[in-house]
Length: 309
Image (cartoon, rainbow, N blue to C red; front, side, top):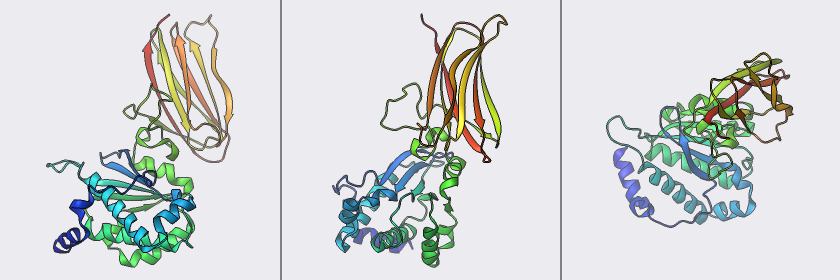
């Protein structure tokens, strides 16, 4: 196998390919973002971008364009591999996430062919560089397609595959990747290229809580000094009511409503951000009311900042 890989690398021109300029029109199709729970860098493959007819034609309309796509994909992988740590004990594999939401259907022969070729190249020449292949937002027809190509894949390759339906995609990602490392569009709290909430970043840990059906879940943040509390809250898919209040320790003080209980719909902003200036001892109480018959995943994190007049 090693001999065949060396021959393929020479024939494919890998050393020169790494430095080639193949354009930037596919930068939203494949990108690196964060790390999994074991420290592997995570690579996202977003097939839904090919719903754009112009991009699809530019990428797959003839054999030459399909080969350029394969070369671009291998170039991206090679550049990513060069950033891995090959010292003893270092992380030297990549975690792959394949998002099939809005992916062109089974009638798009060109995409299916390119996908099959890419998987074959990865299996034959990069078998030890992929730690896991997670497919999310998987439609029914893709499983049928997978059954067609499955006989051409080794058992070792297939053992790395995980498939998740749209309803279970976020839960599956959180099994392998911490929510603070998961991009916001996939259910997490990581926002790249955005200063919408500079108080939090990818290094700030997130707490996960499962909210049972038809129950209320509260989160208490105890305060022992004058300060400013800032927090982020997300329930994947919402369909819950969210509220927050400050309850002072002193019995003669009134509870302050920070966030009036509001029913959150799936179309609302995915993350709620709040802050409250605290002048006396007490606690912030966040309440999530889940009226549905489904379990919900609550994500939250907070910071204590210095108090200033």
